Length: 517
Image (cartoon, rainbow, N blue to C red; front, side):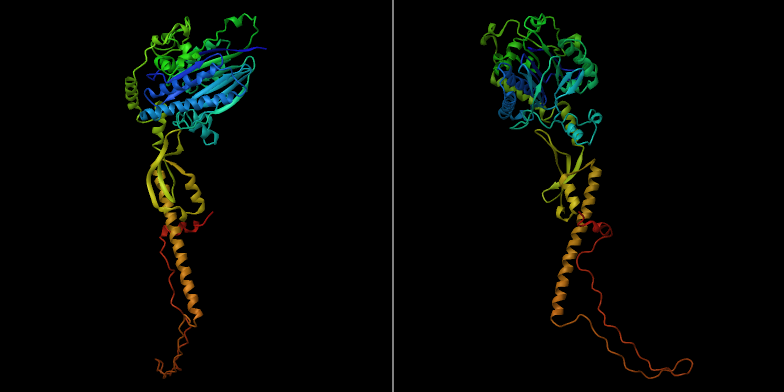
């Protein structure tokens, strides 16, 4: 049995975005999509860099340890992005997702970072084979929201992992056994975030070839409003004999789509022209007969829906055929683009970040309590919270153990009013417990002193003397009264107030909770 891949790729900038920050590559051994972010040109640069780095895998003969090859390539792409940020700090916040499949002939290696997705259609059933690295997916995994709620959650674009977010990247890596008849889909969230799982399954299960299926999926996303860039790769696993008629009709020409296809000068400058991706993109010559990015799938000039392949071969072009940009102009272009990225996050991600800044929670700040603005999570490269108001007067040690645990785990309260009420509640509890502790300490000290006094032979009481007999006193009836005397008074002490600070009426209501586990 000889298994082969038949693939197609397409990309569209969508109906709202001004540019395309997605990049895609489909070749005989490698299928990959990167969804860039960071605002202005940073997103398209990030996705282009990721693809231009990982695409070298398509030239290599896959070894036995394909996961190591994938992991190394992803880390190399991450290092390249970090290096670019070091050269131009204004690019800080630039990042990209990456989802890729590496084909060995019998197996596929899968690498995944971010929220682009990979699916497998087998026996008519579509299965998502990647897990989104998003804050919302974490909420789903923890059972805090449902899958349905996740689709409309305002924070659904917040990434927990991305290339370029730090010095080290942690991709998901796995091996998948393939079977003839399998169909794979890789896409950016411009498709999966708009088109339902059921519609994806129905479309992929149709009898259309990969190219027609890619076009149909992009059209579905555009009909859904096309709020984001849309990039799609569809690949079929076929069992073909050497003499099979269809075998001669399957092209192994790589296809490059999206930002990486549009950035020809950058591709050449980075050396990608020496790779299948470079040979595929060539000089941006469109595949004859496959349509362009114009009217058929959106407004004219709205973006390409297919890829570009080299119709003449790389050897027909010399280095002199390409104009390398001057470094000064390149720096200026980056700086101008980056000026629009001061918010760090772009597009839907920025909108999600803005939403987090309307949220508040209570947490620990060292040994005391603080009110935070944001959510208690760290995005790939951005802190999603900051101290709104510190409360050093609310010391953790004076809170009951169960409240200490809650604060250290953070207490999400949503709006500012609710968060402030929680602060007031904790302040009252801490004050009551602190006073209670001080009262107990003072009482213990007093008892200790009292014990020392008794040991010295003195008592703390005063005895009263008996009164003597008095003369009779006439009463109104004229009969003499008996002897008047007073009863002996018992030995008593004046009541001693409990030492220490006094609890308010409100504090008295909650003081019983002090020490509660």
